[in-house]
Length: 528
Image: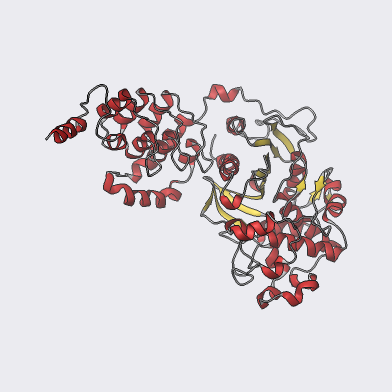
């Protein structure tokens, strides 16, 4: 009887001042019982504790729309930036579920609108993304949490997104003070945003958010070859140098096109194995002998994606021997060559070795002489394997400005100062005409980039209604080309040495930069 009375008192929020209510805090939040939540706060209950399902009281309130409980938690001193197991704060979740009043309440209480979740997204990223892309997630949540009382009105959620976005955007007065003027020593002509017919507020928002990322190094925006914006962050400057990781692959592609024009590169229909005679008798899978250079350039060699296969990834990147040629023989094929996209670092290295063997050169000197010198750039360094072959999968070190020069060259279809540096037909084929669709492991890359494809070592995608082509390196190295708007966007970032992408380490920081750039591209032609 006493236990029954105590339970009734707990359910109605009545408790002695010196003891916690019998109703557990997560249940009280789920039931939107503000009195019991307040009693927990008074009794010293941890208002930020993770439950067995990875949720916190505030995120439970945001999920189920428990407005009274949310207010009681805030009044009780709950941490507004406490994250659930997926890295989301209550603000992220309230925005996702279209809970406008909750978003207003959280912002008024001091919630950080620039906080990023485990996917590198701000709450603004969440509500600006296409609603349709989130419907499968809503369907899953409604099915799983419906028995606990979650009801979702999809029409209302979609309708709430524009208003929530307006709440989350930086204040116009703050944006007016953002300075993204290129430094005086920029090598590019300078043009103001207004003269370049670009929305200044959108650019200011881009640079304002960039200034709150701890991993970004540099951010440049060129239109028609002129610098509209150029800034560096976190103690870095124009001369900052570090490996640009898989940006190297797109440079490798350019060098392949140049070498084809010069007559030394393997033809696109040549077999990759022809350039590795020393292991031909070790190839047990006959399909490997049919892999063409074209298939390899398009990441359709049949070799698997190592970053989703830890044993293969470790064999490449955590071995004392960086000689990858034997892996041509010992790595298994995941699919028949030419049938399926799979992002393979091994494949890029095999392309690079084949090219260097065919042209009797190394990529560093060949790239400096035939690509970077003609556009005024410099290869600071380009690491080689134990046999002296420059790495084709990564390890190229250049400045952000030289990345921009390279991007502008491709935007100009390979021409610089009226001279051909990369054959224009190769630029078209490698970046626009020969891409494989569905070239990512999920339907979208971050919140804003969809329709992801892959050409000859170049990515393609769409943000909003704007199509673009991009080179992309681990950590957040980006060269984005937007032909429709004559734009080149370059981002450089912490290369994240020591973090293993096969284990998801650092992926949130990398996605933050993808979201940053993707969101800006999505605004082109949308905002006034």
